Image (cartoon, rainbow, N blue to C red; front, side, top):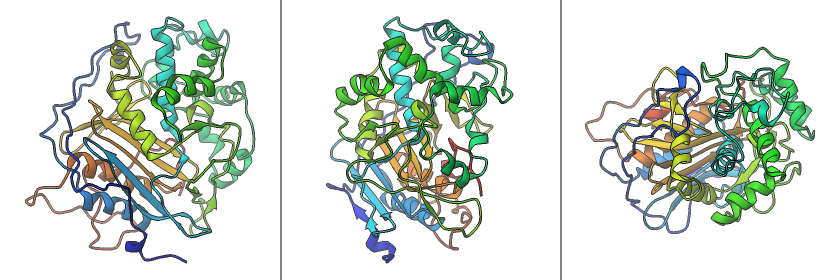
Length: 435
């Protein structure tokens, strides 16, 4: 039974009316190692941030409701800052039982995994086991068809390696069902990519590809002699005490309290597909991790505070190039930067995996962080709506004299409050979006 929307709103423990402290973003500096392609030599620096503001709690909740209005069964967000965190949730996390969305629940974080993988690899670079500007084939002989492709190119999505998921999920539900229980080797996934034409010459342009981070996983395992699961555990999960974060590939189960994910078929009006249980072997080190909002808050804050990487490696990670024509979205080494409408820059990653959209971002000083999830996918409007949580959390209330609200997004009722600023542009997806 579907409960009224206001009854499905849940508050996390110690909900605050105010969370203080968005700190100014600082300029990202170039890495100590030389950059290897002319297009990479100009780092995009974050603008100075305005004075700190409190989150707009009404807009935060409205962004979640907007995700429901366009097809998500449920959505949740958790924001941290000085003092206690706040959490809000709407809708259901299990359509079968009607259980309300719970901000403490585990879920699949998709490509936020890429930031975990980048941290591990950059730690290995700092230890001298790998070099950012060395050819990948130096460490994995004969794997790639071009010796010019470097480790840095993988982390920055500038290798030109085709994204095999474009073909794999050309037809959303049939593609998913074909791989739901399949276990791939890394080599098999790379082979799928190499069947396709390359998207660009190495280092020339940004082109998002899951293949890059499959190869990153191979590099981690080659350099350490251990699985990526063990390296995530000993280098990130245990040091930060992320008790609800795991990499369970190829197991299909999410242990403990968790949200179910619901995949929209390409065909209009077709029923949602419960996509919760799957191996995620098609993604592995590019997208197979599980976490909670609280753990993602901890991870992103710790990363930006310098607890996981030395300054030189964090600077390399934060050296950004634009990813689109708006010049508000950037990519570094396994890390995105979004410049919001209020002038604040936030750093983190998005995640798209069957049944889940995720945002995990923090301010440059790590003092405020956000983790948001909607339990659906293949519904771009829901992803865009969820992105409205960024503006609400990091920019606060819009001034009374602000311009009129934009027109409702597709599927929203006239007069509904809409996500604003950053979210007025389509959200970036980490998997092909259909329908």
